[in-house]
Image 1 (cartoon, rainbow, N blue to C red):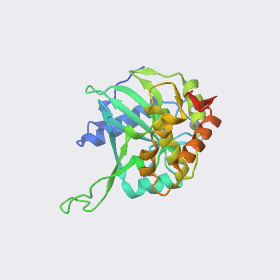
Image 2 (image 1 turned 90 degrees about the vertical axis):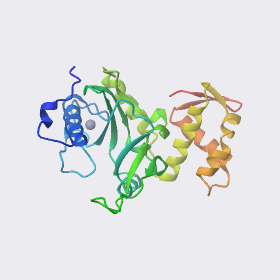
Image 3 (image 1 turned 180 degrees about the vertical axis):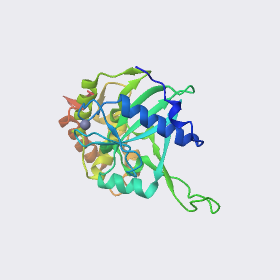
Length: 255
Ligand SMILES: [Zn+2]
C-alpha cells in the first residue's frame, strides 16, 4: 500500500489548503472502499457538489473528506455554519472522513463519522469574517471533534494499518441502527453515550448516570425529567446492543 500523497497532481497550485484537498481526495478515491456497503471504490465528485466529495456508485452513500496535518485536536474547520446546521437537520449531510497526514505527506490515519452522529451542539459557529475580508460577514463553522463520542468514530486506517473491510462494514451497519432523524432524540443519545464514555469502568450503575444529571439539564433546558430521560435512553442503547442490562440498576458496555 502506498500511503504517499501524490505531489505531482498539484505542481501548478500555490494554495496549501487547495493542494492538500486535491491530493487527499485523489488518494481516497484510489484507495478507500465504501464503509457503508463494502464496494471496493468510492468516486470523487470533483467540484460538482458543494458539500460532498465522494459518492459510492453501489449504495449511493455520499462522503466528505477533511484532512489535518499531524494531530486532529479538538476542532476541524468546515464550511458555512448555516449550511452545516441545515444539512444536519435535514439528514442530507454526508458521512465525514477525517484524515491525518504527516509532514512528509503520508496518510497516517483515516476515521469515518457517519452522518447520523452529527448534532448542532458539535458544530461551533466561528466569528464572521472581518469587513476587510473578501467574503466579509461570512460565518464558518468548526466541527467539535473531541465532543463526538468514540462509538461514533469508525477506524479505517490506524498508523498506516487498514482495518478489515468486513469489520468496518459491520460496524457501520451496527451504528446505523442508532440512526434517528429526530435531532432532539439524536442529541440525547449522543449526550448519554458521552456520559457512559466518561465512566471509566466497563460496568456502571444508574446512580453513576444520575451524576450527570445537572450537566445534561444544562444541555436540555426544556426537559423537566432528566432522570426519566436517562433511563429511556439507556433502554434505547440496550435495544441497539450498545449496552447490556445486568439487573438491579447495573449496566455493561458492549460497544
Ligand atoms: Zn456503498
